[in-house]
Image (cartoon, rainbow, N blue to C red; front, top):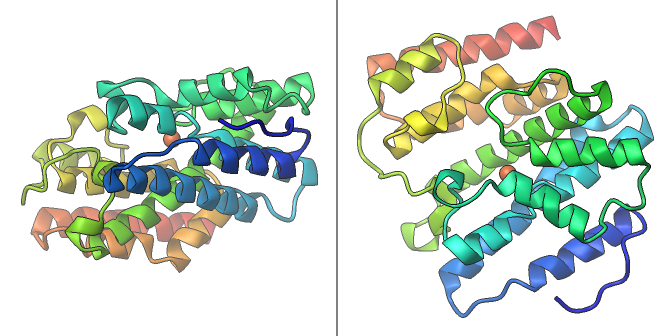
Length: 264
Ligand SMILES: [Fe+2]
């Protein structure tokens, strides 16, 4: 990576990120598409984090964007070295992101407790469940980054299915086979109002059902409003087979969203 000025604030962190992304090059168009996917994803997660944190404490808004900007740094070396975004086949990309942020001194302009909060949000953004016992500021940032991350993964997915196959970034679907099946176990988990675990998926349809189940893991009212505005659940549902069991879980997640919106 070419020499870049030390990170002193959010603006110079954005500059560092641009140069970091530029340091991942390839002659292979598909590899470039996968890097590009993560660069755009990161910028969109920053935007979503700003939308969720707006109107509150400006320092929290800044920290949310710092965490969003760093959350997927590990995706680039992960794809370069393993050609996959599937952690179980490679490494924990969230922990690698935290390590890269630390090693490059990206958070040195923050206070010690802010740095710990951002590192926790980055390093834990991919866990199935938020661990208990985190300091409240760290838990808040983590919840924020997780909401923002989901909002953009939903966008990536709906664009992925709209794009012609040859233009799709190969690793976006995590390598799940595009079979015309939804696993009964996955459908049952969504129907039970629980988040689906990645390890139980067998097909791309299952991955879409997992993304529907994320509705149970949304933390902030503004995220719920964005989900509604963007028609996230409807767009995902449109790519699934119109079978009874599928239609049932779709209407269940939609009712869950409506209930939470009216309580917000
Ligand atoms: Fe991630």
